[in-house]
Length: 55
Image (cartoon, rainbow, N blue to C red; front, side):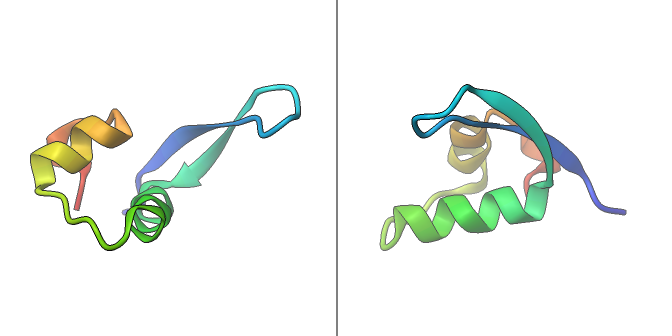
């Protein structure tokens, strides 16, 4: 089962929400934050998702 989450986009454009797979959101966040590491709880807080949903 794939979980979806809302992601706000804006970068100079009007802010809008789009649904993205949670795995894509996690992957994008971790690549952008490299080389920092996050525990599950910290990753959930950073992504504003429940800890149970974060892989």
